[in-house]
Image (cartoon, rainbow, N blue to C red; front, side, top):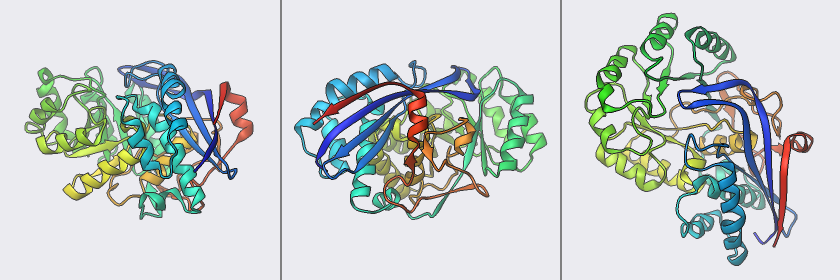
Length: 368
């Protein structure tokens, strides 16, 4: 996979509707699109999913650009890559900055699978021909939540994730459960609670939730283990899982019964697959989390979610969930509650160059 250049694109698009959590609102999404080109004229695409501000992790678009241009690409210039697994090994000399690493690493996976004329899903070991689709409801009112859920169910989504916080939890879930007594619901707290809220969290057992995601601190494993012993609802860890070792420790400590795997958060597809394989071996269900992505990252998620351990519908919604027009073609669409896994080489989608240019904010090309 001899490279000739790497293109770095920063794009920006408004969301159709604000995405609200107790940590803040996302109304405009900025992101990084990576294109790596090899000597045979083949291109691979990756996406940097850090946000503009460090509300989800410490990374931002600007810090990712700094890491990509000043540290990660220079490593690639000095070290030829034959397989995407080598990218993860090469980048391991630099700590954290997982979303910057994943932006490049995922592009190598796309390039590698195209060079070998196989779908990315098969390169990763995927077995599903379609993946179950779930969607997130992130709003500040019960009325809006019910309206959104009704629309998503009409579109065929198999699972609804609801953002909660101490300001809006029991009353919200109670009303949703009243209207939809059999709906598959999970609640995502984004670290909104502490152990002092244990009675409040216990009360959510009333609603037969699939899971409660990351109720405690974003970097905690120990206290989640204490909480899991006190509640019936399975705990799912998200922000606490930044590596294979984090997942291993969480499972060994009994901190969770489910793990959300996000490619950007763990540093790429190789680490995501390692976590999947370990959880599959241990009987821990996993699902693929979303980051309000553009189409390239969404395409990588579809391929990852084709692995056999992804038994819970992921945050793999249609492109029109967030965007008036995505940057890939065809756009991702949910049919009968599922998304078809592409069978063409690589991620299975083409880049909508016209749309990319419309939303482009900045570009740099680094020649090898």
